[in-house]
Amino acid sequence: FFLSCTPQTETSILVSQTFTTLCRYPMMITYKELHDMNLPELSRKSLPKSSSEAIFKALRKGLEETQFLTEHVLDVVTGKRGMEDGSVKQISSGFKNPGIDAASMFWFTLFMFVTVRVLQATVFPLISYIVGVRNTPGVKSQKVAKFAESCRELSFYCLTLFFSYKAFFDKSWMYNLDEMWKFDRQFLVDPAFKGLYFFEASWYFSGMISLFVDAKKKDFFQMLAHHVFTVLLLMISFHESHMRVGAVVFVLHNISDPFLQIAKLFKYLFDASSKKKTLFDVISTIAFVCFMLAFFATRLVFYPQVIYSCHFRGPSYFFDRPHNLMEKSLIGLLTALLPIHLFWFYLIVKVAIKAVKGSSVEDTRSDSDEEDEAPPTKTKKTQ
Image (cartoon, rainbow, N blue to C red; front, side, top):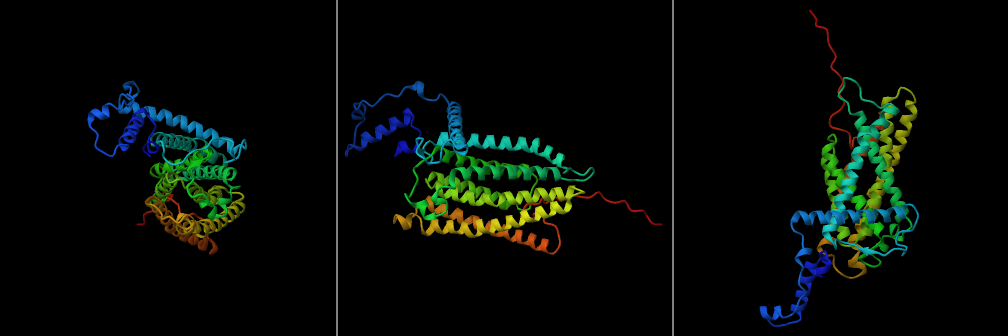
C-alpha cells in the first residue's frame, strides 16, 4: 500500500521493507534485533542533495511523462490505433506517482497557456484585421481582443471535440451510463486516456489564469467557480479511477461551446462590416439558436442524468458498497455545477427573448463590464 501511494525510490522501498519485516513480529523488537535483520543499505549518492534538486528531477521526469502521453494521444487521433484496443500496455490511473503526475500537469498547463497567449497575441488579432474587425480610433474599444478570445475558445473546443470523437465516441459507456460502472473502478487505462485527461484539465488551469489576464467579464466569479469545480472534478475522478465519468462530463460540457463562439464571431463581423450585414446576422442568430438548444440538451437534460447515475446507479447499486469520501465529494462537485448552468441558461433565454423582440443577438453571459465608450460630443454654449 505504501509503495502504491509513493514514487518507488530507494527510500520508499527501504521504508516498505522495514514495515513489512516489523509486521511479521507480534512482539516488540529491540534496536539490536532490527539491526541484525540485514536490511539493504541506502546509498547516499542516490538521494537528492537538496529540495531544489528533487524538484528539478521531478520536472524532468514530468516532461518525459508529458511527451509519452502526448505521443499516445496523437497515435489515437491520427488513427494509428484505437483507444483501449489492447495494442499498448495500459498504465495505472490515479496519482500513483504524485510528484511526476504533478510535474506532468504543470508542463501540460504551461504549454497550453503559452500556446494560447501567443496565438491570442499574434495570429488571432491578424485574422481580426484581415476580416475587418478593428478597434475604433479614439474610442475605448476591445473589439480585436474580444474577437481573439472567441477564436481562442473556438479553436480549443473544436480541437478537443475532434480528439474526443476519435477516442470515445465508439465506446458504449458514452451512450449507456450503466456501462461506466461495469467493472467499478478503472485502475488500468490507456496512456492516451490519461493524456486527454491532462490536456482537458490543463485548459481549465490555464483558463483560471486567463480570467485574471483578460478583460473582466460580468460572469467572472461564476466562470472562476466553474473552472475550479471542473478541475477538482477531473482530478478527483482521476485519483479515484473513475475517468469514464470525467470523460462523459467534459464531452457534454464542450459540445455547445463552438456554436456560441461562432455566433459571437459573426456578431463582431456584423458590427464591423458595411456589407453582407444580413448574412452575418442570420448566421450569428442560427449559431446562437444551435448553442441554446445544445446547451439545454447537454447541460440541463443529459448532465443531470450523469449526476443521477453517479449517485444512485454507481458503486452502491452495482457493487453494493457505500461511496467513499472522495466519491461523495465527486458527486457534490457534479451537483455544484448544475446551478451555474441554470444561471447561464437564464441569461441565454434573456438574450433569445431580446432577439425575438427585434434586437440583434448579443452574448450577455460573457460580455465585458466595460462597454465601448463613444467620445463625448461637444455642445455649443448658448448665450
